[in-house]
Each structure stands twice: as C-alpha cells, then as structure tokens.
Length: 199
Length: 329
Image (cartoon, rainbow over all chains, first blue to last red; front, side, top):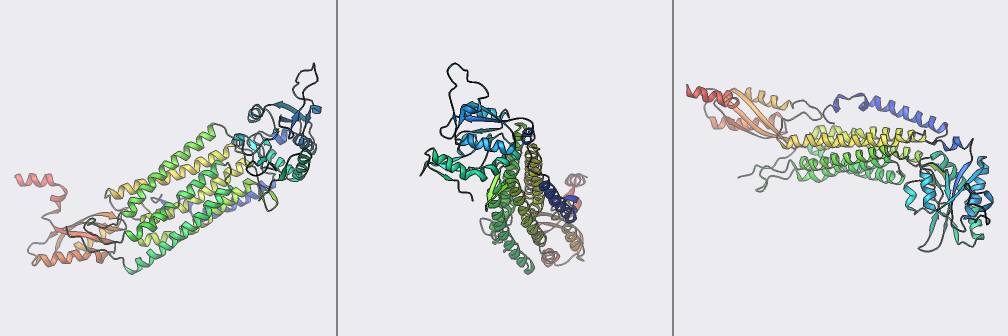
C-alpha cells in the first residue's frame, strides 16, 4: 500500500481514474441501451419458442388445482381447466402478454420450489409469501399484495428461477400493472387484502 | 526514572493536526452516509455486501486517528516514561489484523458463492412510482461511494505527509484505493446484468483481496515500527534521509571526529542514540555534549529523543569481536 503507492502505478494515477470513469459511464449507458438485465439461463429467450412452465402450489383461494375426474390419472402437466384461483388467472394474463402458452405443474410448495431452483420450472405461484425461507434460494419478486391483518399480515410474492433477472423484471412490471386487479379478485374470494405499499 | 519533558509539535504541525482531525471527522460522516446508502441497495449481491463491509471497516483508521492523535501528545509520566507516541501505531496494529482476517473471510465467502454456482437474483426496487432494476441503484450507490473517498484521500494525504503520521497516511491510501472497489463492483453488477452470473462473485473476490492486502500491508508496517525497525520515508520503502542528515550535522561539529546514529520511529517522531567519537584533547566535554544534545531538534522537529553518547571508536561498536581481538594482542 504505502510502499510504492507514491510511484503511482497506472491504476492510481489521476488520469487513469478519469479514463476509467469515462469508460464506465459509457459502459453503463450502452448496457442500459441493450436491455439489461438479461437471464443467465436464458428464460426470456427460451419463452419465444416454448411454453411457460408454471408450478401451482395448492393454496385456496390464491391457487386451486381440482381433483381429476374419477378414473383419470393426475396427469402431468395439469390440464388448464383444472387450475383455478386468483394467481393462476393473473398468470394467464401474463402468458397472453408474453405470447406463450402455459404448462401447469401441480405439487407441494417445497417440491415445486426445488424444481424451480433447478431451472426445471420458470415460475411458481400459490400463496407464496415474502417470509418464506425459500426467499434466498429462488428469485422472489417484491410483494404485490398483502393479506391478513394486525400481526398476521402476509406479503404475497411470485417465485422465478434464481438469477433470471430479465424474466423477474418482466414479472415485476406485470405485477405492478395488475396489482389492483389482484386485490379485486382476492376480495371477491372473501379475503381481506390490501395493495402492498411500495416506497 | 525521571521522564523527559513532554514534546510540543511546532506550530505548523499543530495546525495540520487540527486540520487532519477535521478531515477525520468529515471522513466518518461521509462514510456513514455511504454505509447507509450501500446497505439499502445491496440486496443479495455478494459484491455489494463485500464493498459494504469494506466501507464500514474503512471507518476504523479515521476513528483511530481521532482517538489517538490527541492522547499521543500527552507528556511522559512515571508509568509511561517514554510517552504515548506509539498509541496510534498500536491501535492500527489491532485494526489491520482485523482487516486482514475480515478480508480473508470475505474472500472465502466469494469463492464459496462462486463454486456453489449461486446465481444472484437482482430484482426490482420501487422508487417514487417507478419500477427500477436494483442493479442500477447498486451501480449508483457504488459510484457514490467512490466520490467522497477519493476527494478525502486527496485532502488527507498532504496533511499526513506534513505530520509524518503513518496512520493518517494509511487511511488516505485506503480511501484512494476505494475507487478500484467501485470499479470492480460496477463491472460485477453490469456483468450480472449481461447474464454472467459469476461476475458478482468474481467482483466480490477482487474486493476482498483488496481488503486483505490492505490489512496485511499495514500489519507488516505496524509490526515493523513496533519492532524499532529502520525508519522509512512516509509512503515509500526508502530509508528516511533524516538518519544521514543528523549524522552529517553531528560530524559538522568541529570537535567531533566521527559520528553515527541509530534511530527508531515512535509514532511520527524519531528517537534513538547518537554515537560520537570526540577529537583528542577536546576541552569542556560536558558543554560539548549539551551542545550535541541540541543538534537533533535543530535538524528536524521529528528528532525528539536522540541521546548523544561518547564512544572510543565506531569500529568497536560495529564489530565488538574485532575490538576484543585487538585487546588480546
């Protein structure tokens, strides 16, 4: 540090610093121009040619997967008609805006989130909340609606695969635009909800 | 043991000391704002977390300087007959040890994240009704963290040089190097934005190497000073020229045949011994010695505690075995 610092290797010289600053500013501007952030595993790109794989965790009325009719197997993926609820409806709207069909996968929350972590699914919905211990392992959105009252308020989120920041930003913008619809739909189901205050 | 009279900094140095203390207070203020901004934007980025820890740790040198610089000036007393001038060097030893260990820990964390293949999720932040990618905010925070650091470094460096205060100098050097942290962090975030998930951990690794290096370098320096090593010119690896200047000034005394000097750093000051070989037949040796004792302070204000002593020959000091041989003959 002090030994040799005065000999000013290029990094520490004033000119070096100013040049670096210019390079960085230009870099940031270029990055902004080319649609940052991107997905390391390429979710947004892949969605141009394949359906959106959505895991639905049973959590009425946020997401409900109906029993198959007697005699039929569970079926994987789950047919669209058997998936209902506030969040699946929103997912359908998202898929429409993306121009992709939806492939529903049913299961328990943990199992679905594990599959999400392994990039086997693109999105998991179904009453997920911010306080979930999974928040560090998958890419959770910021909360878009909250339910409950007093101490027991839950902040609801959606989960995307970890690090898929481009796709996550798309989800965030979608949820921001549709959060009022979410409140209305949830209230219809008898939930005491409120828009998540954002500041 | 009668302690020496206390040391008083010359006027110019006293002004610089006050200025330095003011700069240290400003450093603490700006570093606090930086720490707050970084904390609220860091999210789950390993690079941001590492940079934040570095920013918090860089509050230690100015704090040490503020706490120690006044106390160091206290005059010697019975318990501390040599004074308190090593206070900041000692505190800095502790601080640099901490820095080195924390740096290694941060390095371990970054490598762990990299090897585990964890893709950092950098989501959205909602500000004033806009949905913004958190990466932009992180880049802004990193850019902000660089500016006060570099400005403060520029101001502190000359003060440290005038005071010859190595702790303040080290503080300025660490602030100056902060800009490489900012660059690494920004490149890391941009890398993640471009889809390179590993850019974040790599940036974190680079930043933690910087912290470790700072810690180890200052540790080495502090240990050397506390071992009474050869005084080095501030900010370099070169020997301090005062050693030679003092020796020359003593040799210039008409009654001195030869002289040599041994010095050690005591904070910003220098202490040690001057070995004088007196010309044959010099009268009134006591007065001569008193004259010699006044020479160091005349050469430079840093030469505080140099004790002159008369010796038979410098050869005997440097090579005592040879002297013994000659004695046998």
